[in-house]
Structure formats: structure tokens, C-alpha cells
Image (tube, rainbow, N blue to C red; front, side, top):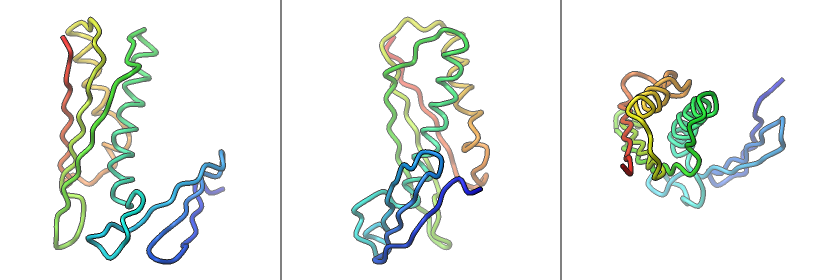
Length: 136
């Protein structure tokens, strides 16, 4: 059974449905690639998946070790490359909540991000930079 179904709506727009939940999202080609840029582009979804996946793995670590990471904010920047057009670099910045994390917890949180399946699935030519901003 499919995990996701998708339907092309025209004008470089695709509606995707998560089969198990029925949740829908729309992707739109970016303005610099003949689109309207009115929704996430497919490459935006890719870099968003990386950030979400890494945070999920950090959340699993936190849950297993009683380390509160709720409220972590994430900023994602992507740099496109040409010939072929592709994602060249993804920068993910985790802005950690103002809590008293130990050095060990900080190390484990940072390591957890690098074990997410999306990070491990992306082509090695895609530069992935994870930065953590700790309040203390």
C-alpha cells in the first residue's frame, strides 16, 4: 500500500496526501523555476524533511533519557547548485531552549541529529551543516 499519493493539479502544482492520516499538502514550483512560489517547493520539502527528521530523532533521545527539548526552534537554509539543478547545501540551525543541559546531553543531542534517516539517505554530495545554539 502507498504511503503517499499525489495528484498533479496543473500550473506546476502537486497535491500530496498522506494515506494513513489523510493529511494533504501542496507543492508549487519556485519562481526561479517557472512556478508561482505560492507553497513549499519540492526541494523545500526535502530540506524540511531533514530538519523534521533530525528533530524527531532528538525528541526520541530526549524522551528516552528524560531530557526536555520541547520548544526547540529550527531554521533551515538551502543553497541550490546548477548543472544539474539540485540541492547543494542544507544548513539546519537548532535554537535550543534555555535549559541547563549537561555537556553529555548536548553531545548526545548533536549526535542524534546526525543519525536521522533523511540525513543518512541524502546523497553525499549534498553538504549538510547542523548548528546548535545553546542558551547557556
